[in-house]
Image (cartoon, rainbow, N blue to C red; front, side, top):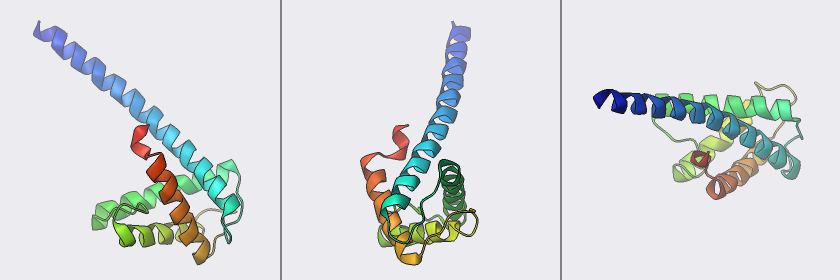
Length: 128
């Protein structure tokens, strides 16, 4: 009987891993699409293709992860109020220096952080 419970637990863990990877891929694709739409409607933010937006989404996520681990600050636009919002705008602005074909000015980064924050509030990343 105990062996059956162990097998079921292992099966659930493996299923969770699969959904975790799939969920992560879906989140990056959604983030790339959101960046593309945001770039199209935000003044001071150059339009970008899907590959550029996907690379930008990966870099933004990596920068957010590093900041969370080092400083224990959530860099989502509405994660820590004004601090998280400003930090999110700065991350978006700095991303342009690491992603070819991405150009944004500081005002565009602030507007982009606002748009991304609103979209994240409507469609939270943890849904996937």
